[in-house]
Length: 583
Image 1 (cartoon, rainbow, N blue to C red):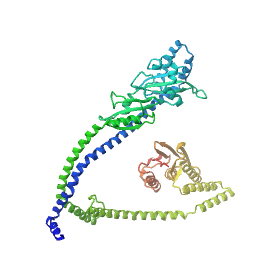
Image 2: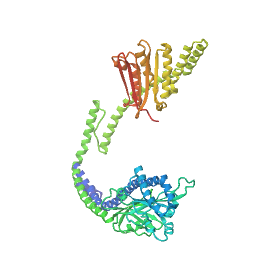
Image 3: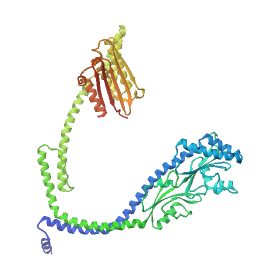
Image 4: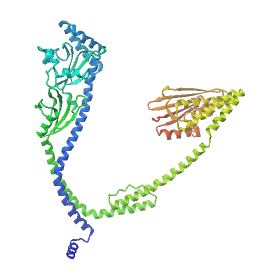
């Protein structure tokens, strides 16, 4: 049995590797591809349904955010009206007016409401009318007649007081209540907002009336902008008296039953063959709904099934072609690896060649990683040497004993005081304070006001040396005094101004230091009226300015700058501009 099986294998086994690949690809690739074409139809339908649901919910979420912005404008409109003192006083006074006086009040109220809207620049594109109702249920409107609509009949008071909107407005205690229908019952494509009007001057916020704003449901054309052709949108509002359809372009000419709630109505639509997506709006509490007939969705799914079958056949043909050239594809990456090795021996360390995710590709990627790590290792050695030099520098700095210097300067100060040598005493104090500010407890940054204090101490020492020849004027905006900057950033510029500008000058000299906030940047200027220079490059190549420039670039990046302007015989100006670091 075993020998017979071995003979069969030997007969069907191809001697050439390329033919083996061809047979393997036919036996392994084609059956799964056709099975995939059969299964993918059902999978695509489910995936399409899920994708459409997610997309619709996302669109509803975005629409809800747009609705919040538009409806917040209505809330602000309500607030602007109720805080208007003239409207409040006229609303209170209207309860005691005669019918003749009420006509004047109506005209005044309409004009005043329009003035409030104009002064506050509210968007009233979708507002159809605004009405005020006092506690006697007298109504004054802008944009409609001054009547109570469906309530303007005998028994008006109990009809209003038992209405759902009236009770909701009282329970809301001054918050804007969004109704899913026209409060006056006169317009089908309109919804209303109602707000209890409270007296702001009353300690208990005594009610004085109601503010009613009627809004066209055309506002939803802006909210649901971007709908596709295969579906539509609805806005549903649940209330004590039933379910209200605020907006409906998904089922034109058809209204949902008022009985029940939104969930029950949407479940019935699902049973009728609709794909239903929903989202709750936070501002109104309404339910935003997207409806799409399932037959439209299945029509697309049927097309996907056809496309999948064609694609599976095409993939089968490609699999046959790939099997012919697959053997050659194995040799190609080996030749690439060989070339990379030869290039590496000549010094190349960066390779752009890419490999497939197979065994040969793993060898090639490993070689690329080894070459890259070799380069990184060399860079780490350089960084290690730099850190070693930095450690040596810190070790030398640590040998300076701050407390020893402080105590020594303190002893010099008291000896000068005992000997009544005030200049030496002042110099010792200034040098001690300057040294403390320079060390700054090991911190690399310092507030601007401390850096300026450092400059003051430095100027004190220099004026003692040069018999008060120098004067320093400092004009720095108070807003930047507490901002952190790199220490020893400004003092070297003042020192440069003295040694290169004022010291060679005959007579007195002035240094002017300014600091302002220029947008996101700080701009400091150090200007002297010294001898100036013809060649600015001499000063810029000096150690002091070069050190400041390098530290500035390292700390604040390439957007920072240090520029020098000088004119021989008239002085020098150095500008320092950088963006401070935020905490």
